[in-house]
Image 1 (cartoon, rainbow, N blue to C red):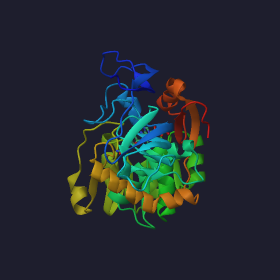
Image 2 (image 1 turned 60 degrees about the vertical axis):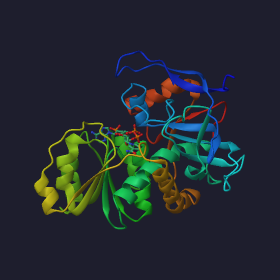
Image 3 (image 1 turned 90 degrees about the vertical axis):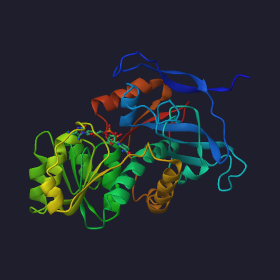
Length: 338
Ligand SMILES: NC(=O)c1ccc[n+]([C@@H]2O[C@H](COP(=O)([O-])OP(=O)(O)OC[C@H]3O[C@@H](n4cnc5c(N)ncnc54)[C@H](OP(=O)(O)O)[C@@H]3O)[C@@H](O)[C@H]2O)c1
């Protein structure tokens, strides 16, 4: 018997590594619920920087994950396996997945679900999922950011950046950010950054040292990688931490180990996607305890830059390619617009 199919955004493989494989709306096999899992009807998902790499064959999904793009989702439950007690058909849910967010239906273990707070729409929940969870894990869990500590966040206008500024501020820490345009600098300040600077016209190391009176920062959240590592190690205070979550600028760097030793620094790498189901469930429960109340009470808010229908996926990716967005670009099915 042929398995049921569903609509999904698919990539036409051009055969060359690095090619911008064309995206189109097609059909894919609909996943079936296994023990301990739920089936979600996806209403919205967001575009993440990693999707741009995956469509070019540069960031393959981990073994066992859906080959369809999409690292997050918001929707409602259409099927729940019998042994699951907490969740019911019709519940509004959101979360992260290692793949499959750009499909109409996806399955995941029930212990990795989050309830959508009543004040958030599907679009806002999709805009929050991957980037608030990534910012929470990198700043709080891996980086150990404490109240009154300072944190340097690059790309303050990005999805992760807009989440990280707000989470740092909500914890009582001091977010300092870089951004690529003066307009983004202004918006980062409105969002809660205490220092924001245009890294294209000002040296961030000088600016951060001036702002902190030469003290430097406690934590750096970084996805530029190699070209910035030396400067980050210079900027960190004693016992400082740099959390590397991406490598947009390159992967190979020389580390001035004298700074690491004398200041007792830590260089920490973090990635959500490759983690085991057990670890993902732990991350989600910690997020539910610490961040969900802030989302529910409006202490932190997803920043939605633009909404596109699934059929407009190329336009949505175009915004991230140009980096003209501030916050999140969201894709929706049918006519869901909020
Ligand atoms: N490890 C994980 O678990 C994890 C999870 C989520 C995301 N990530 C990573 O986190 C990064 C952000 O993701 P996203 O989806 O939020 O991406 P995004 O919205 O596309 O943002 C990327 C940002 O990088 C900034 N940028 C580029 N070059 C820069 C430079 N030299 N200095 C400072 N900023 C620079 C851009 O800022 P301007 O346009 O202002 O120049 C842009 O705002 C990506 O590398 C992604 O892969 C990792």
